[in-house]
Length: 253
Ligand SMILES: [Mn+2]
Image (tube, rainbow, N blue to C red; front, top):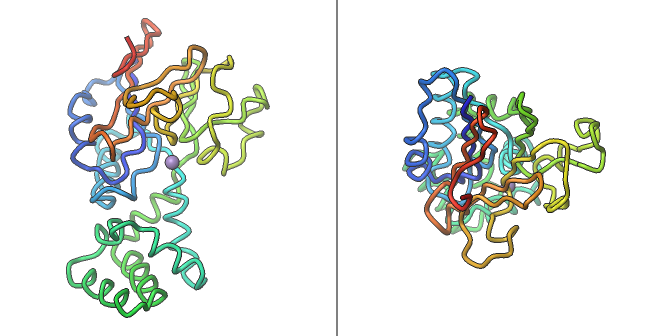
């Protein structure tokens, strides 16, 4: 089997498509695993969600989509619409309103900008969420069902941020939902009985190597694959060949 993994696409639809074009999903022994954070920051969160959903429709379980902390936040935006503190926090955190813009048509987006100019934060937020609920209910339902991890038959776990390796073989019970999507890279350099493939923290940060943008292996059990698309314009892709047990990708020799 050939496994391909990408993470932290963050609304960068074009970069995602470029990396995707190197994967042959028509091959029956291929599998694509996406580690979450499809939305926010980049220009087309909606487009990325739709493409991943389309890939799953076309290829079924050959395409695995996991959940990142930005999907958790997306669901919070949708569900906590009545909390005014939350309200203001979200609409202000959406830099350049990129996420809201991708979900709204031009007229609706104009209305949101108008409300924000009047500093009607709560109204802008409620309007945006109501529009997303009305027009993209399928995406919301899909995000709600995204799993936290994928365990391969080859001694690997794919996850957005990490797992609680201190729990040993009971990591599934020992890891909180929040840790799966948010935990810091606590186990770098330590051996675990599974290979752990994660995103969430970019590889420049986790490796400590200035300017690093490839896949980073810590020398033991961990592969970090978020090459920081917002900074570098590319979604790094990790490949794994189960015949040879070898990982490859940018930055790995
Ligand atoms: Mn993340």
